[in-house]
Length: 354
Image (cartoon, rainbow, N blue to C red; front, side):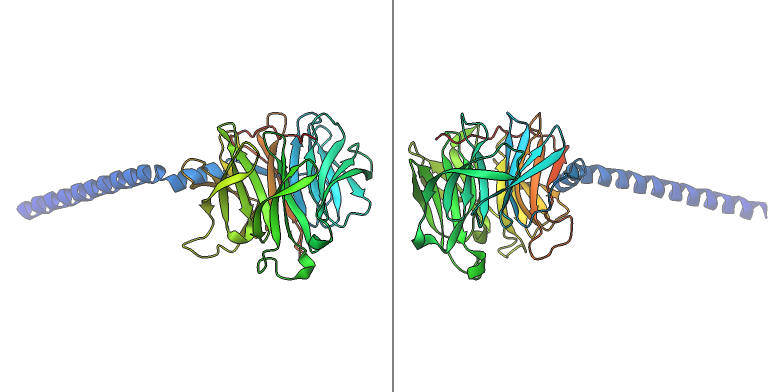
């Protein structure tokens, strides 16, 4: 009895020891696995994704919000509603948005600041480029003069995105009017550089001329550009005259060669040269690394049709995002948003030299 009981106790002890050892091995393995997972880039990106905040700002709900431009002098964000059409100014200090109509405009597609001329702006109006005056508060903006007109031969197109480069030159592109058919099936658009009252063609056979930005301060002679239907971001070298050379594909949005279900729209870059691409149909802004040309972060926006982006705020560390309610999308589609906590800064936006 005693001998059998002692043997049974030894067996039980060995069993407990084996179980304890197995538990230790499991815990150790789990701990190493957790540490390894923490080192994976995608988990770091997910952690980074959770660090930002998206806030809806007060203002009119746009049909097709576009073209955000931060003005350091007035601490305001100017942007447009293409289809209303209207120009808007979000006053940062007041946390309030002012709006104005422009008589005779069927569309206002972009707005840029003008050097040395406060309360003056250059806009893409229908198929022409116009200098306007607006005090930022009144309900009506006023024409000053037409800078360039594409004329009757281009009455089937309108201007879309436009922006000013580090040298004060305006670049802007066109697209076929939405009422004339499938925008992705045709290539009636062109991309221009404005000079002395003339729109100088830089690129043709474009479906939807869209986002553009420059690689500054690193290489201000390098431009990034989007034709939405191409599903990519192109890069160009810019010569001394401002003409584009050496076109390459910088970033392809296709997933395994297939359409991702959304298209690139407006675009900006931060002080490190990384790109921020608004996605029409994607409910997000994509941050792309300038050096590796890889996706760094996806910034989720509570609106499907994200149209454009611009850095602003007193420290230039807040990302403003315009959206669209096109097609009867429910609120908050069409609202203006601000993203904070990204841990990066933008660059001052340039003013057009006339």
